[in-house]
Image (cartoon, rainbow, N blue to C red):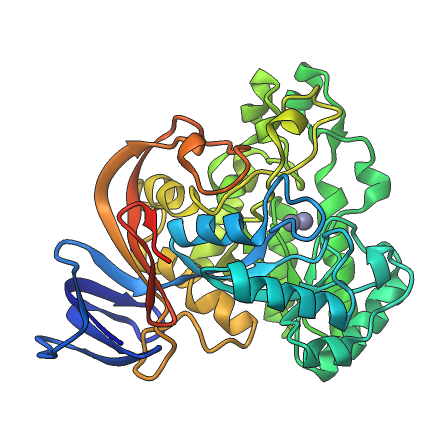
Length: 429
Ligand SMILES: [Zn+2]
Ligand SMILES: [Zn+2]
C-alpha cells in the first residue's frame, strides 16, 4: 500500500522544513519527502494550497472507557481525534475502574485494536485507584505499555507518595503528568477567584491552589531526580515557577490547553457550565503569561484535556455540573484562528507544540515527517471558514466552550500508520 501526497506545503517542525514538497508513504512508513516525486502510488492526495504536517499528538485525553461510555468511548473518542488531526492520543487513567494494573492496560490495548482509528498511548495511575495512598507497580505497567503516569483528576496531596513515585518513575525515564491543585485551597470552588467570581457570586479557586503545588512538585523533582510534567498550566505564577526551574536544570516540562490559551474567567458571565473547567479559566494576565510561555519555550506543548460530559450533567446548576470541556475537534481551528491569525505565534510554532514537542516529552518516535518515521500525517486546509458546531462532532459529548465561534482552518485528511482514517469530513475504515 502506497500513498503519494502531492503539491502541499510541507511543514515539519522537527527538522525545520517548510517548503513545497511531495510525501511518499510506503506501507506504514514515510518513504520519501522530496520535490516532484514520480511514483506509481495506490492512492494520490492532491494537497495543493494545503499544509502537510506530522499528525498531532495529544498528551491529555479522557476517553472515558471503561466505565463512562455514555460520555465517550474508544470508538467515538478516536474518531473525534482523527477529525481533529490527531494521530496519537494519551488516554488518561481516571476511568472506572482506574487503569492501575497490567490488566487495565491489556483491556485498553484490546479495545483499541478493535475500535480505535488513531494510536492510543496509555497513561497509568500513579497510585492504586488514584486514591493517593499506595504507589502502583511502575515497572510492570511500563512493561505493559504505559507511556506516563498520572493521578489527573485526583491531585496527589501526600508529598511522600509523590517523592516515591518520582523516584521509581525516574528509573524508567517516564514522566508523571501532574495535575497541580491543592484541594484544601480549591475545595467547593467553581471558578478562578477574583473580581469576576465575587461579582457572579461563585466560590473562587485561588491561583495559589495550582502554583503552590507546581512549586512543591518542582522541588520534589529536583530532590528525587524524577521527571515531572505539569498538566494544563493556567496561572502566571505557575509559568514563573516552571521558567525558574528550567533555568536551574530541573527535569520539568509543561502543557497549556487551547481553552486556557484563548478564554478567560470573563466567560463565566452567562453561568454556562461549558466554561467550567479544572483548573479554572484565569485572568487576561494569566492568558498573556501562557502565550509568552509558548513563545519563550517555558510551555513545551499544547494538550487539549479533552474531557467529555453528557448534556444532562452540564445542563445542571453550576455547583453540580462537572469540570471539563471537550477539545479534540476544536483545538486546531481555535488555536490557528486566535493565536496564529492574530499574530500571537507563528504557524510553525503552533505545529511544533502539537507534534514533535509532546513526542519528545513521551520519548515517542512520532510527530515528525522524517524518512523512515511512522506515516502519521495530517493535511490541513487553512482557508476554510466556518462556525464551530459540536452537534457535528464525532465525540459523543457536546460540552464545547466554542459553540458558534467563527474559525478558519480544518484538517481535511488524517493518515495513521500509512492508512487514511479521515478524509473530507468522513471517517474512512
Ligand atoms: Zn487535570
Ligand atoms: Zn484531565
